[in-house]
Image (tube, rainbow, N blue to C red; front, side, top):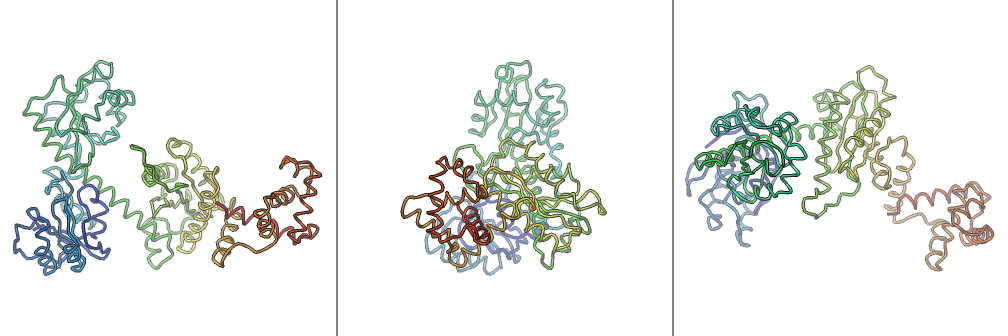
Length: 549
């Protein structure tokens, strides 16, 4: 039994779901807190601590009734069996009635990996815990110590890379490799020409298809002098987390190959723990930002923890204009694009505007951007935020099609009410940008009327439909008779009564236009000499235009 400090079950699943754990049956209650990890010997009778996760390595679907009985009696939070797990209707009903959650360890994942990662998540829920967490004997945050240890065992320089060929850690002795390796270490990413050469040669396809190291004749593939490589994929279950690359003159012998296979399992734990740490930090920041913007009783404390109190700020909101996933292989979904772009925006703001904080809250990335100094003038803040947003979109233009940014008003002090008001402005601006393709970034003051028209349209929709005024009657006539009288009246109003300009915009003869205009006023029952009637018609047309798809 391993005692932990506690973490919410839904949070654990958000970190490990899809990598190590799968939901099988039962409801994931956000109020359930996991406090312990228990490895269950075959139908063991060891007492459970309330909130324990029961790891049932030797059990199968037939053992579910016994496991439920034991879990309920001990106050367990969940039971985990080896997947794939197929439960019949009776077993699922029994799980639902018990209040437990039944989870499955994904195919190819090890129980050891799950135990280590669960323990890491439980211990990470307390801040300032004593002692340094170790993974397989190495500090959890020190991937470089691990890289050096692997390099020493293999007697060769190595790098640990993620799936995008970004260097996560490297050992010493890189000067013994070649120029490509030196560029890789200095730039913390494999040079583009080398990555493309490997892709053309099918290196990654071979690497990710097998569970053994592969030999890569790098000089032959890349056409440059240097050493070959031995590469080993790093996996958690069926998911590839990254790879280890060893610079060697020839293939490894069987003994060193096994060392590399075993090392990959340890690296997998470190990469998973690194991911968990990043996810925990991101989640804490997102929770604080969401709380600060919600104007609730916990907002003042969240603002203080974000170090934004008593500073002029503005809220920036970023989203993907159309949240639709693509099915093309290798193409990121809108959600993945948004997550990646949110991280990029957070980094950009941290450099350009120190003190800024940003995080995803639902499908929107919110950033709270402070002024450069507490006593600075807030009037220039939206303009500076606009310039920063444009600079970000310009620098990160690749792959950001469809990303839009709305900027709220500046407020003199980051009080809960002020922040909520600026967030509301940013949300309204974002809605206008998502509704009107073409523009990618705007301040609220620039689109305030458009936002108001959308809200009037919402009000009308909630009351049962659009305005039942002259324009609606004219629109119905057009639909019934195949005419374009609404377009005629719109062109005249947009041209401020200039018939020549209005007729030219529709490409019709001025006399034909005059006839259509007279016909439109007759059917609509409008007096175009009455300024109130003209304004009402323009407003009705604008609302229709704003609320149309």
